[in-house]
Length: 460
Image (cartoon, rainbow, N blue to C red):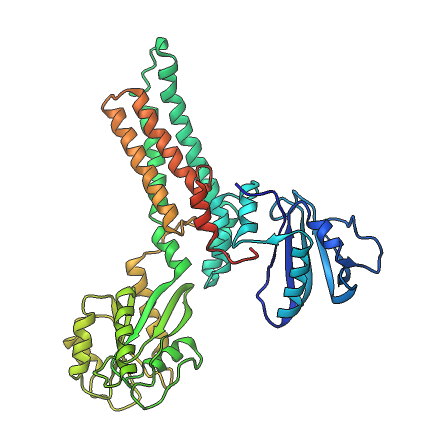
């Protein structure tokens, strides 16, 4: 499914920094790099594996020195890709990294595609597909809890569970096929209570895994949250207070926020992806109108809305107009400016608003922010209760494959109870095995692999 060639890429973010890494993997990795590397220790054509070697990278064209580097060689199969891997640790800067990568490519490597190093690790059997997806989850983890979930998946916790389920399905297939292959033995497999019991246990385990999807998605992607309200009620101040830093510009001038400001915060380990938006009002300018159109478009994608009201003013027609737009959505109402004399009290809010999740805060002085965070946390849990499981599925591909597996097992169970032909029941079990194999990669097509690894960054 891939050429046995040598690939190379910059494995660290391009920019100024202490260290930049260029990674090379493939049969010619060592030969290419040693043609560019010079060491005070002498000949480095056969360096010790898993050791660092100090030296310089030179341009073979004119023998000029490009940089001082540390060279690490990992002989396959004891490497990330199970191929020979060489990493050049140089100073981080756009020019030096690009120049060294250019020399490596000129020496015979080709530029790696997104995710190609991890794809080779999968194709060479070092990790399965669920573990490969966990690599991206680790890179994109937004909270410590997200990182722990991804790390457990990379360590193979989910894969071990899936392999146990596959073994259980294989046992069922062997029982069914025994009655097909040895009809003279008169094996009444279809009415076997043990077969029914094992099938029910496997189906129950798969249902429990499917139930973890919403929690896994929650930790992996976070909760898409929009701050909404009329101009000058303190939406940007709320964002800054939740972040604990000044991120959005705050002025008394209505319409200051015209673009979207998006940040991630962690509330008890749950990532909240929060956006400040332009105030909804009847703006006269073209830019303001466009900003409000974009705000309304964002509202349709949001999973949670933070509706901000100025408690120092009475509820007016603009507030009521926004309420009408969002009344069917998951909403937390924030009565801001509690440090000022209140003209719209908390008691009145509970009486007249259609929402019962209300927080009284002063974003200016940070009052009530902890209570707001607690309310956000409890609201999120109502839509996605946390399970006791430490094994979670984290993406819709895994969920869909498990649902297909469960459907096939249900069809097999119906066939057992209806005394269908063993051949037909065996086909349902085979379909279940095929579907669950798509998660670990045992039954994945090249199209599926291309979709997964194309989302990776280059160099990983």
